[in-house]
Length: 207
Image (tube, rainbow, N blue to C red):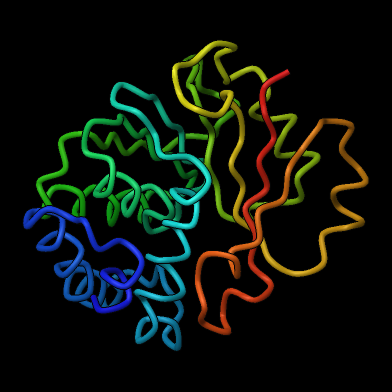
C-alpha cells in the first residue's frame, strides 16, 4: 500500500480500503486458481497494481468514459483502474473462464459496481468503447486488428479515444510493423522503482 500512496496520495478512504484488500483477495484466489505467478504474488503492488495504474498517468479518465480491458487475466489493468476511477465503466474480457471467475469474485468482494467481467474473445464483442486497454497480450499489429473497430471516434477526455497498451522491453521492431501514429510513454518517468525502467504505455489514438 505504501507504493500506491507514494504515487496516488489523494485516494479516498474507500479507495484505500479497496487497494489494501487486493493483497488478501489475490493471495486467496491465487491459491485456488493460479492467475499470478508464484514469484510475483509477493510483488503484487509493484508488478501488477502500480504497473496497471501507469495508464492513469497517461489518461485521467473522465466520468462516463467506457473502457474495454482485453485479455484481462486476473483483472489487470482493469481492476486497479476501476478502483481509481469509480465513475468510469470497465468491461473486462478474457477467453479463459477460470480467470474471469477470479475477476468477478474480486470485483464483487471489493463492491465494484463499475466492472463487468465476461468470458469472451474481443472479436465476438459488438460494443464500442472510448478506450481499449491491455497488458502485453500479443504483438501490437494483430492486437490493433482485433480492436480497431471497437473504439468510438469521439470522446470527452483530454486525449483522443484510442488504445493504451502496457508493454516492456525493446519495442522498435514491433512498433515498426504498425502504420498508426503512436506515442510511447516511459513508466520510468512516473515511477522510480527499477522494475519500471523498461516498462511503457503505448498510446495509439483513434484515426
